[in-house]
Length: 115
Image 1: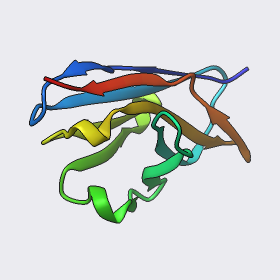
Image 2: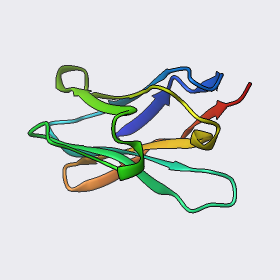
Image 3: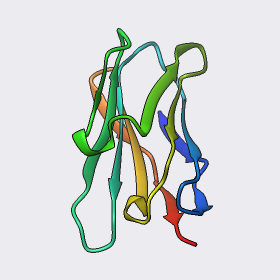
Image 4: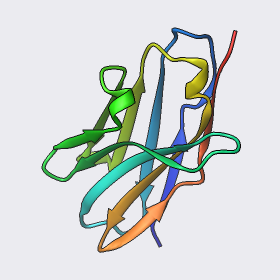
């Protein structure tokens, strides 16, 4: 059974940075693609960034330049570096991974940007 576990969320002041991690465990032969999504209170879940197995990336237009997605294939782990955080970045951040043609989701990690 594959499981995704996110970590790295927390409370940060505006202008600060956080690095989220998403680690996959279980019997994994390959990860085809992975991504980060977020959901703010009262809003729908939205795409933050995606990364494919070839390393190509895709970002929400509004987040380009502040957020960076990366992966470590050897560790089955994906990261999201978030810089210059704003109060509107406050949300629960979820990761997903396409593993063996099945899409898995993490449980989410809370990110709160507030002074």
